[in-house]
Image (cartoon, rainbow, N blue to C red; front, side):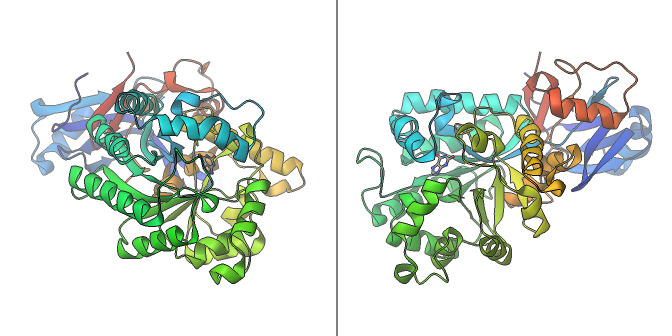
Length: 450
Ligand SMILES: O=c1[nH]c(=O)c2nc[nH]c2[nH]1
């Protein structure tokens, strides 16, 4: 595959992207110029290839013969790259394997043994290479990954993302309690030291965090002792350029466990809620990505909003391991920024498009439960999959716009009489990786479907 890296590029045709939460912009007969650095340097309406060559290239100092041109065919369109705001790269071999388990038994039965086994570098390379390839093929240009406790294989994941050209947040998983002895950090100090080592590696591998960045990753409150939570909160304060990712309020048993493990007298938290525990340790910040947020109380949602923390909605996982139906409309109504996560392998699908489809469906279940306003539209779930996700991972204004394209074909039957809005709805409800022909990140072609 020719990647067209370090070449000026012109994209011509139809572009569809989110203007805001409930509006898509349709640009037909438009042109976008992307320079050798992968930056969009011109967006022109009413512009074909010839017009771009004659009127736009001179201003950019480009000559036509050195520019790579991509043009959409009938029914095809460029669409911004999907942002997967929550997934466990290390759990990819387990997609679809969850039986009738729920969160806490699922972790012990399926998840911890697999994650521990990725300390084997050959296995880690195989799993991580495949998850990157698979997510790119579904149009995921940016992913917030959990790796494992193991430092070398976590670093390998970051290196592989960099080599493949996928934007990524890569987190070494911190956990020093309530998991088998073979899979946990030896102490809070050891966990902190390992985390610092992984951060140092990733920052050295990609200075300036152009594509890949480390993310502070306390697995979830039950897996972390109070001293570890405090140490990671202090680390987040020391490194304000880094995001924090963790899980919150996914499952009833988990919530009860947090209450038991962290009584408010011991943490100094304002109340005995899950959100207050993270807040007490300095982990609820405007750079925090909270996965799930299914069973939050009114007060917790208000606290999350006040701190500016973001939510990764994971409808596939929440359904598969029967955690519950997150009330996304309610979160959005409070002004909380939300994106979508595939959450493999609690979720079984690598596709953010599938997550968008399931977000729409789960919202209908919430509506059937009595909240008539809960239903999410096609426009809204596509916003969550792109611009919302960009804000969740702290890359707003940089991604969620035009990093890649999706095109119509494959499983979507188009008859020719549909409006563009109807075609996009059909893509959301029926599309898959066959519809994603080419994927670009920073101007580099990182996936092409033959
Ligand atoms: O869906 C989930 N996946 C996990 O790996 C996990 N760990 C803690 N809580 C979790 N939830």
